[in-house]
Image (cartoon, rainbow, N blue to C red):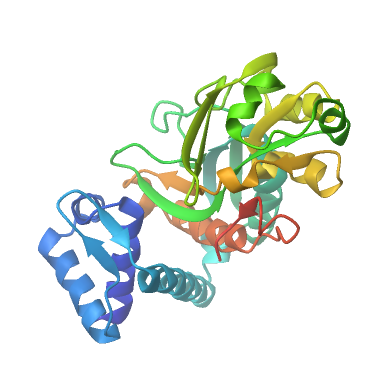
Length: 310
């Protein structure tokens, strides 16, 4: 068994969501991928994936081994680039897109480091809070937050986030703290138009299950910055992605509420087309970005509000 090839196949299968999707993306026979996964499980002496006709689920051992595989493959790829002197050879243009706030917070600093390492590469970064058609808009790599619909695109998962419901201390003192999602109907809320559902907030947790509530929007905004600012000003309760409210939560300008009703992880992924995966610039950035994003320091919120996988 070629262990590195089997590890790469295992990562590809988990990221594609199924053996058949990974086989299509890699141009590899389905039987080959299935055999490599089975050989890997036999070598390790444990089950990595529970497979059925409808779904594929990582076992706890599989989840742990997936992180190991990614780390090993990234390390090997970076070593090969250094040995081959790719940093001096890579040149040309690279087009990327990301959500506005995430892009400003994480992608811009990341690109600065990447461009310093690869002085002959020029980049274009499109920051928009919408799903960009990669082919139509000439984009090589997209950072996307949330579950991906079935498609021919390849994806490398770099972390996960959570939704956080929060309000200013002054608002909670004035109006009280809701003890359950249903109590939100008695509160003013700041809704973020770009989140799915609008005024219908859905909470999911392992212990409390799924809770849906139609909230009263005192103010509707179209950016996360505005939602956080409005909540900080005491207009009402808002619900945004964890990184969007990170500073306000850390500084105490916003307080988290209803945490026990929301522990569902939202994946963060780098997405690119199968044809782009053969581009050395794309491969280099995905490897570079995946390693750096998985190591982002979110210590102050890691336990409750955000977890970027290592």
